Length: 468
Ligand SMILES: [Zn+2]
Image (cartoon, rainbow, N blue to C red; front, top):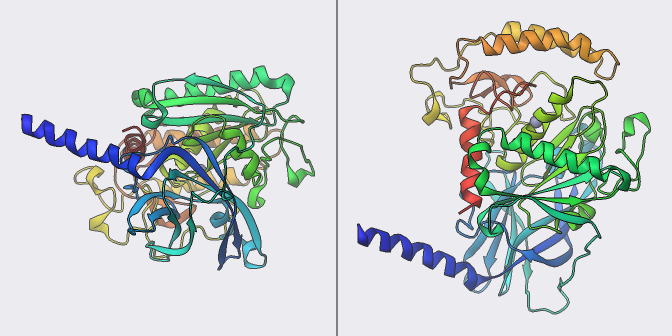
């Protein structure tokens, strides 16, 4: 027994020392332009900054998670050793799945955040090919000793920063930073209330509830010149600090920002692993991209609909935090074809069921359950298509939608398969050919239902990865 303890200590000791051998303990933020078309992509460095203490993984520096459309990898040039890697997805790769990408050339400003190396390193981007295997597609060498290469002082906007939830050293915790967009100086008290409310909502939801000690949460009081955010489809344009806007990829409710520099400067005021943006506007909407950020609308246009914002905040975090895929399939999106037919998606909670006996969540499958698992899909689809015919932006939309949503909830909650794990057809924006683990989940229906066991496990795995 004593020998075993000694061995464990030794291994962790070597690992910790290892980090300090290669890295200074600061964060290197590498800004770059990610450009191209539906078929092609290019990377070009913009600027590099030394920012605060490295709050990301120190133990499992080479990602064990196999999540994301891309991986950023850092190699020691002298020895070729892989020092660090992390999976991520981007607005750019989502844009590549839109009709617009087939006929135009676009650039998106993005950042990689990696531990600051002591010696010359090679940063390499890997992207999944059609078979979902990572292929290295671009790389650049960085010599941190060059005096002109890395800015020592990134722009620090004069926003107030405060800790909302503190549980320890950022290098051993998951650090979330909450930013506001579309809040004026006069609306800051409202922003503080919103930040507290949504943080409570998240840590009242499993698995965050029982792992709250693994998290720190920071708040940055981002001040916008104007209240609200842009709605390009309505001809409404706002001067909001982080540049969030509705109508991303032509979807009225999809909120993203392309003002990456402003976003990173504001977030960088706190140590962070994840960014949640609260959007001070009242049209239903949000967004969440793996290891990028989440957005959630914060005002309702009709009383009684506040619960939907609670739903969105936690749902989007599922995307950004653990790369969970959308399990719903009956709402319209801006994507042309998000998943390629006949290819197993990398998302932990969506499967193309190419090998029935080897489903990626097989350890969670309810013994004896039929695969694919039959469910009341026909009836659910009938309700969904009637609901989809309603005008989302009409003033009586919620009143008209209510009976459909209630019947859909009843159908899922009373399903003989409620709470069980199998492979239910209908997921990832596809009615056919893609399957989800459970009949219902926070990634499936518009409701306050919990994450299913597969999603829950994926979330817990990331909490462990970042908090050791
Ligand atoms: Zn979603």
